[in-house]
Amino acid sequence: SPFGFKDVDARDKVSMVHGVFKSVASSYDLMNDVMSGGIHHLWKDAACTRLNPQPGEVILDVAGGTGDIARRLAKLARAAKARRAGRGNSATDADIRIIDYNEAMIMAGREKSERLKLHEPEISWSVGDAMSLALDDNTADAYIISFGIRNVADVQSALNEAKRVLKPGGRFFCLEFSHPKSSVINKVYETYSFKVIPFMGQMIAHDRDSYQYLVESIQRFPDQETFKQMMIRAGFDRVNYSNFSGGICALHEGRA
Ligand code: SAM
Image (tube, rainbow, N blue to C red; front, top):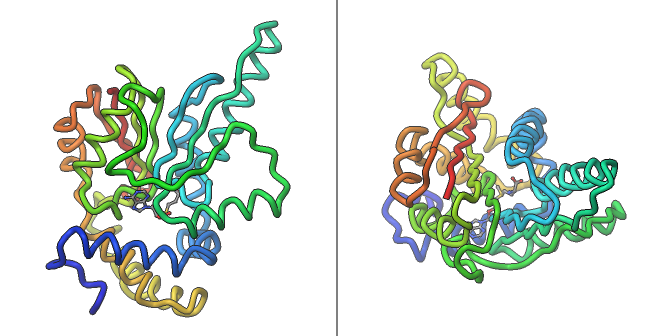
């Protein structure tokens, strides 16, 4: 299959992943909701609450796609700003930067903001690669990558890059599908992934191959402990993770 990646090199992976997201961009949000039964919203809420964005902070939403994470962060930062104002303290907006290497996802996200007339002064959108960010060292207060790092050609280099652009002590978060802890959940989950998801991809997005690829990429991604070690190798401190939904999803965090 053209999506069976095991033997392809990183360059091929980049262009194939690019193709996958280009072809799913328009139906991406809908498919997410259907495939996860809406549960990804809860995982994202938990991750953003944990990141705890503050007014004035520079926050990177890398592989930010259509802006699901950035919008949540903007809302939380705005609430924090209002609380400060309530205490008589003024504060500047958070500076939340969506960076994604696929213009089609960025366009879909911006169109959504316009369609819903969302006022999001905190958010900016740009095209860029997680493996080489157009940012100086020690720029960001926080960094999050949500359901994105699995697709990056070289995961370790994306982690190293995150460490580089974060200020010392800056917060790193990675939300990603992971490996369920119990063999029962794993069995059910595998059946769902390999049988149901490609079928739904065909029905809803008319694109079975892309969703087949997404499922395979989840299987191939390092488990919780292995990813933790990769973060430590990149130089992060206080590295830890929480499992969501029995480990179907995990939130890793650390300090630069
Ligand atoms: N973060 C969003 C969310 O949680 O809904 C979008 C996740 S979407 C599954 C994955 C995104 O990763 C896609 O928009 C894709 O373009 C982006 N992506 C994949 N590899 C990337 C890379 N190397 N650099 C930047 N973005 C990347």
